[in-house]
Length: 527
Image 1 (cartoon, rainbow, N blue to C red):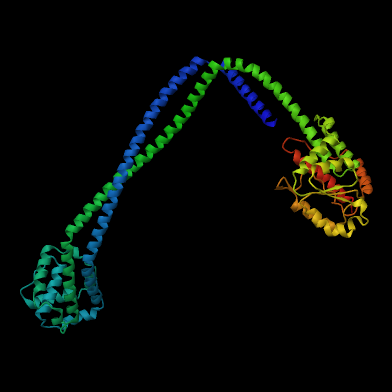
Image 2: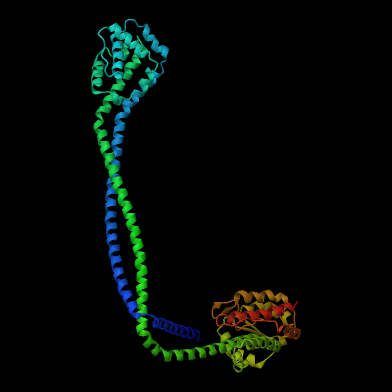
């Protein structure tokens, strides 16, 4: 019934939408809309072509960027390898030259002045000084007079900035002629640091530095080809990087253009779809509404009938649930109070119900039918009643019927206290009837354990089966006192108790709320 009501609402909602669209369509200039559709289709076609062209160019640029990136990586690796090769070749001469410079910097000005004490220097010392002047003075030509040459050399070596010039001299500044001249000096036997070391340690160190410096200069000259190759590689790398950056920027801009075009295309497609739908509804809504009109009337009538039946079912279900829950205690005051509260609320809320269907006989039959499918439960009947017992014995398989009226000690009897767990956890139902007082407090835990954990309903564990009422909640209270108490609480609270709105989705929740109200009332007045 609920599903049918939902379908009826959806159908009527669809009819209303069609009517609204038809109403809108009456005020629309259909010729203008059709013209706009044609124009929009042309615009969409142009934008799609432009987007496809830019997508193709993006793909081409992407491939070019991938190729250039690979080439750039290869060139960078080649340049790195060439640099490592050059560094390996230069490392030896540079290190040797550096050691010689460090050794020379250990000498002071006083050490250099010792050269003035040498009156007749050996050929090796003279060659060393001439070579130094050849290195620092590109146009140097030695004089024929050896004494004059030696005096000039002493002045050159005693210059305060000599060692600084020597330490900072760049080997690349040596010309080819200078290197040829130095090579002639170095190849002479007299030019040997070990031979002149006994005459002057300074000249011996200078002799070693000259050899290392010449070796470094020659190595640099020989590596000019590798340097040119490295420059070419760097130029190629720079050119590729510029081209790559340009293409990447262009690709990024094209991607933005494509995104913008895609957004515009989506907007225009939506407009086009709306215009087409509007034309379609404008052309066909009249015939469609004519066909739907009789169905619409029928659906509205069915919806009214469905709502009426739902309200009646809600009222009957709530009343039936209250009645059947209270019936098992078989206390008329409880039943009358609960039914009175329920019917008052249903009447106040204008919810229809048929009280003639809610009879004790119908309720008992349904209760027994449900109990027959339960696995474990206990029933407590506070009065011997042939109608209920007959129904229970008819529908239940081999129940344990315990007549407490025939037991002298009632609940405290040894047989009851010893066998109570067996009755509670029995596979077959157990019916306690014809008792005047409720179970004592010491039995409360056993029974509550059964209620909370052991009750099963149709093979599934539930918090409480719908058709079972456990009336052992109170600790000490006879039925006569309970009846007086429930009547008193009903008189005081009938006007203030509000059960809330009953709906198809919360009937079970409302039943539990009413049950909880009755049980809590019992607990309060049992203290």
